[in-house]
Image 1 (cartoon, rainbow, N blue to C red):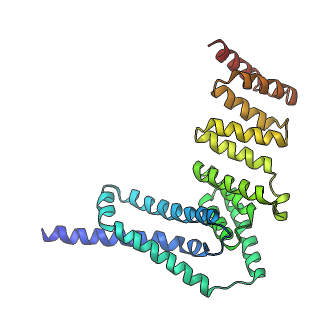
Image 2: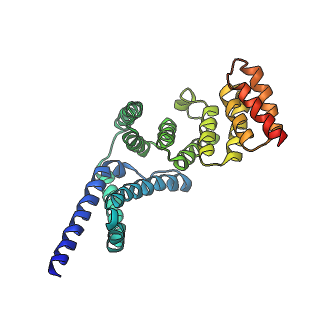
Image 3: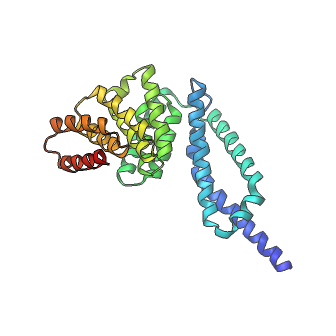
Length: 272
């Protein structure tokens, strides 16, 4: 009996050590997320969700590695994890009070993190890119290119809901004003297209079609937009929309090798 008690204590310590290592690794990025200086409750809520999801994801990975000890881990340490998150937020706030950066220093760090994030994404190091982009956003919540790259990273990581929320945030920000540093970075129509792709993966086909209509309002004959909305209209068996889009695609991109396949699929659903 005593042996089992010792074994339980050892496993408990191992669990705590693994949690500490995972959380401490992410502490720098979490510490930089300044929720106090956001100019609205919606944006504050959005960033708070990023923090919560990030920490929850890391802890879920740890729990997965523990296998059959997962239930034991959750029952014994649920309150501990809550306290740990509170301590992290307290430490982050203390860090921010001590670390005051000038405007030039902030801009330099943002540019460096943003550039490194893009390079990391190209190498397939998407989680590292995510961490760097969150850090950049923490220093300047108005820097929309970082949000766009973060949405792209989430999409590549197959975190489609996070990607959708991020692209929606960008579009809401653009509806209020168009920051000069964003104007030449990524066209608004491309954000609608990226949002449509995320909605498609989430099976929100109607929303995806609406997104593409918005994109086509900005560029009526873009073959990529027409191709995707045609695919979605066939999936929804909306023959009228599919026929209309197919004609537009044939005019805009007559060399498209998928036209014959689209026509065949449309004829099948029309006959059904």
